[in-house]
Amino acid sequence: MKTISSGFCRFIQYFSALIVVAFLGGCNLDTRMSTFVTKGPIAEEQLNLFMLTVWVTGIIFVIVGGVFVYAVIKFRERPNDDRPMPSQGHGNPLVEIGLIGASILLLAIIAVPTLRAIWFTQETPDDPESRLGAWYQGDDLAEEEAENPLIIKVIGYQWWWAFEYPQLGITTANEMIIPAGKVVHLELRSIDVIHSFWLPRIAGKVDLIPGRTNSMWIQAGDNFAKWKEKQGLEGEGPELRQDYAKYLEEEIHDYYYGQCAEYCGESHARMLFRTTAVDDQAFAEWVADEKAGHGTPDGKSWDEWYTAYEENPEELTGDLNEGLKLFMGRAKCATCHTVNGNPRALGVAGPNLTNIGSRQSIAAGWLNHRAEDGSIDVEKQYDNLYKWIHEPEVVKPGNLMWKANGGGIGELIDEHGEPALLTDEEVSKLSLYLQSLK
Ligand code: CUA
Image 1 (cartoon, protein in one colour):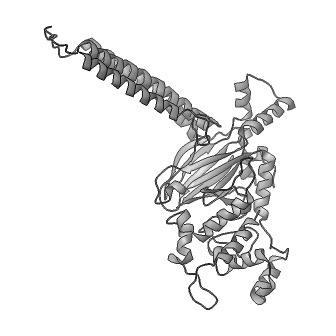
Image 2: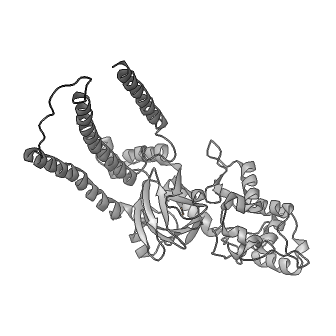
Image 3: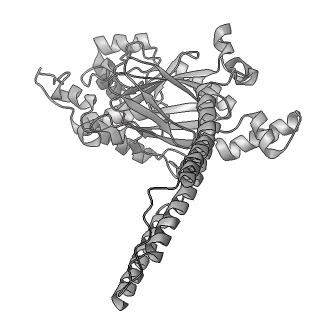
């Protein structure tokens, strides 16, 4: 008798310790990838559905587990047990019908909100306030562009993300800028294999499938109407609008982490992305900045620069000019990368590098140089660029840039026509040039 009870006690101890560890592990729910502290209607809808399912299944677990434990303890065999065997039945119709009924009821409790949520997340809202023309402060838009919400085409590559803004005529990579509180319609497709778009605090997940376009909508923060509803406020007026702007500024303007959520090859875990939610004015300024692109390092026109590049390249001096010469020449960066403004950097196989010096991470979010206060740690940024160009195969195994550096697509050639990788000095100058693109 003694051995049974002490064994049981030990089991209870271990089991409680396990439960405590499991709970402590999930203690901090407010992390950058948390699905529990949501920042938008889609993630909120998904969280509500998740919690409903947790409650329903939790109750089932407690009832079934309780009956099981009760039966095991109450009817267990005791030493010298001479009670007769209980009568054996083949079932009880009332209990069976009752359980079937209860199951149907519980499934309905989960199914109805699930269907509602599917419709909610599938249909991009089309209220007048969500339309691009209603809030965008930048260049004039064509009528049909203004009629739609902001559209971003999300394109998955092994292992990075392209974000195209067709109505605004810009393309960026790995860091998506969105206006806070506004509907954004996403069109998702893939160039190579299946990827999955997941921006945990705002929305997730939808797959990017080759040969097919999926769509979803996202929104960072509530819109004005929803915010008023949650606050229990009514009416219009500049003061309310001001309070709403303050809510967006304090709670929504932020840098959000995203991640590819479908295994897509050896560097799948390094296929991250970032999203920054900003106010309307900052968004318009960012778009204008992207469109304008970059000039030459010394203020020459691009025509002058290219004439010098072809005729007297030694005339173009300084680290940035040296970096740009490498970018266009020996390092072959422009074969795969576009830099807006530069008329000959038009490659599309790799990420668009316009304003890469303003991005807070590189290599699809894997190398981060964002300081605690949200600014860019310039030294870290240089180190990251250097590391990425110097040993891309270490930073992101299997990536195509490595192949371009002598392993597959192309080969780098030195001034004597011999194959040669970039020297440390060349990598340094390229890093400085890229850092200056902001
Ligand atoms: Cu892309 Cu995993």
